[in-house]
Amino acid sequence: MNVITEIAAAVIGKSNREHPADAVLRLELKRATGISREQGRAISRAVFAYYRWLGWLEEGAPMEERISHALKLDDEFRRNPIALADAELRRAVPAWISEQLEVSAEWLRALQQEPKLWLRSKMGQGRELALKLGSTRGGEHGLPDAMQYGGTADLFRTAEFHAGEFELQDLSSQITGILCDPQPGETWWDACAGEGGKTLHLGDLMHGKGLIWASDRAEWRLKKLKQRAARARMFNYRAVLWDGGAKLPTKTKFDGILADAPCSGTGTWQRNPQARWTTTSQDVAELGALQKRLLANAVPALKPGGRLVYSVCTLTRAETVEVQEEITQRFAGLEPMLLRNPLQPDQLPAKSAWLWPQAAGGNGMFICAWRSAKAGSGTDQSA
Image (cartoon, rainbow, N blue to C red):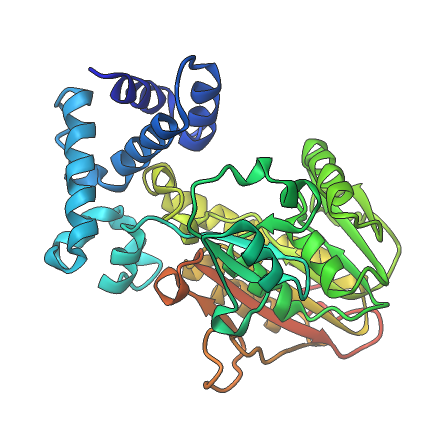
């Protein structure tokens, strides 16, 4: 067993539901000595190919053989994606997912491809950034600040990254910020901010004017946000803990609330193939209930006429349209808003935006929004 297969096998052996493969991979590569960057990329590819093609691998075979088989399948698919029959592609996902979304051949083929790496430049600086970094394409889909990087440089070590000229941010996440449409001088709440990717984007779209409250249930994520905000030179925000409960982190009323809620992540199965085999239908049901509670708890923080934007990087019915329908029915004072999907500029605005990996190469995502028509919030019809 060569060193690449050996380390890849070690990562796979230590990965499970509680220990995601990408996190284990980072740790193992950090521990490894004498590994070149090229070898590191080969190890990463072997790990992700294993999970991408797991449905084709013989369970009892030695790990070395399974990894080798996965890489062979990956190579063959890269050379000729259409050679694999549509029916055969069903092996790429667990059977239960067909109960929650339409499993199309186009979606499955997208899942089996290598994900694209997207950057977000500072507003209006996309062309200049592309020239600096090289191997970078921008301006696709009418989004001038969205950049697709195809090089091999460690972007975290570039001078441009340390100068805050760009963020690594998936295309679909960037579209979420654009659909929020925050205006300079407004007050916004990024209710599930995580490490702050969307917070930073909202701040950039607001030209640093106004105020953003950023909350998360984990303090360590908010510390990451603080580091990223300092590098991006963004200062018009406040970070605060919030567990998603009825007790809100502030009495402030907001022009806009973004609830990028915890979800099953089925929209990230191209980028994170291990999650296909650790996520369950029970997770989807539990998260759908959590998302409804979180949104209901956030509604009272809206100003009259304020906007509530709901986004999730999942495509399951229980976490998308079913959440949207319940919140619309429950709060009479919330009016669904029409959104124009930037990836479909010729189509009429709709009550939701569905972003599929096969459309542009970003994560799968669902976005919808409401406007508060009454003072304070909508009226909870279930109370």
